[in-house]
Length: 609
Image (cartoon, rainbow, N blue to C red; front, side, top):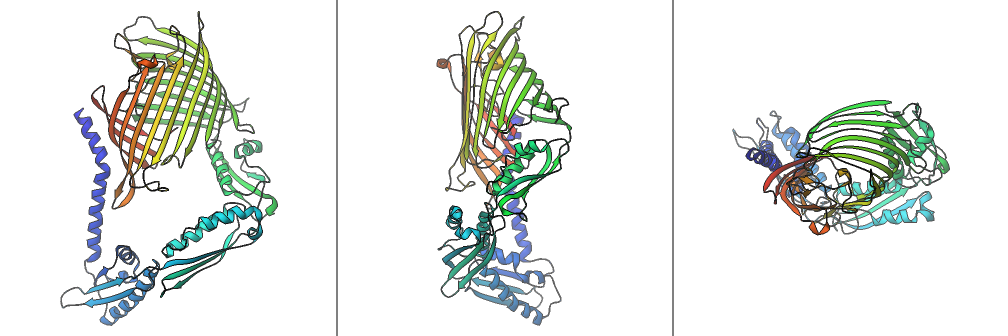
């Protein structure tokens, strides 16, 4: 345990160690820039931080510091030129009347010292903004809302400080808003920033030429070999005759890419055609008909993991997709396959699947079989699933001589709703899912039951409104409730009951460690489940800037019982770190299980809901 604790401390200390190292590196770099070896002169810049940083990076004079053969006349010319260069650069930050002084000190046997002093004065502020529209948008009643949105969301309004970067960004934002809906050929036909240095004011003018309004026509599809155009139309869900929308084209492209049928998909509008019915160009590259993926991994819940997944995109005879998977973990071994039909016009698919699994549930060794058949639908925000399921479980306690066998058949409906700001790295929003099923046990005595499981997850920012990475961080919260309603003496497959504990449940406890404790000390799944978690996530700064690392403090709680009155929460508390890695969010947590009085390290990669 001591080794585990030390390893966890090293992992959690990583971001702060990186911060210290980065700060030391930056300090060393600054010293080197102040006096490079063999320099023709040393340049000192005395100015506010933002101006000093700009001049250090972009002042042309910096290029000549290592030319040791500079004459006094050439250096004097460069210093005069540097003053004008500095004035131009400072102007990009909105300071158009700065006081710039250049001093040159030289002593025999020492490196000359050049000191550039900048007193910026008051920054120029926006006095007036004029946004004009020409083209079809100017008089189009249907475009009124779009015109109002461009004007209302202008990012450099009156009263703001003028900078060149902010001016460029405001123009580009207005152009993006223009071309994202109905007017893909829009452009900026004129722009002017009229600066009055004496008054410290800027008058901004921009004219947006919308060009014609476009409607989407038929799909022009390239690259199909095995699949037909009808499937592409169903996947893209683009309707001819509707107004052009860049967001719709991007969503269609994402749906085609995510379908698995294509390695690449590019969806664009042919703006050279008739704007009343411009063809939508769809360029596709089909994925291989069959694919085999071998995987190796590990987690603190399930230990080492080996997997093999085979995909056949078009099974001969039926044309459905087949995905078969073998997975081997420390406490779970599973093999299964799923057949899925191509989507219909409403994006519903038929699906049939089978799963054979052996796993450790509490202290029971459970061998189970599952057959499922139904229909499912996936959208950007919501997934739905309607299915009939057969379950059989053979449970063996370590002290029992004979296994307990239970069977059931049920009809189920499941859905998941997602309203996160961004995936897979959400910082605000929420998700909610639920499963509702009803069925009967099989065997000599049949008894009815109803099963319900619902779960929720949300993120609440604690900083300034609209800031997703504010220094105050955010709260990440999740909760789940499960219940199975049936007679007391019913014999149900243990896979239909509930357990808690693990990386994404109650940290500080092992996977499925929280259940119903029997008289002999064994742990089994129960009929009722409650879990909850509150986590404070706070960004870590490196050199004063927000990094991809976050620190966390959390409290988890969960309970499993066969009666609601018997629910007694098991609590876990701890600290952790989060990293927005290139392959998804990495979670590293050190949790203390209050009831078991022990530390446990949890690591998890990825975000799912």
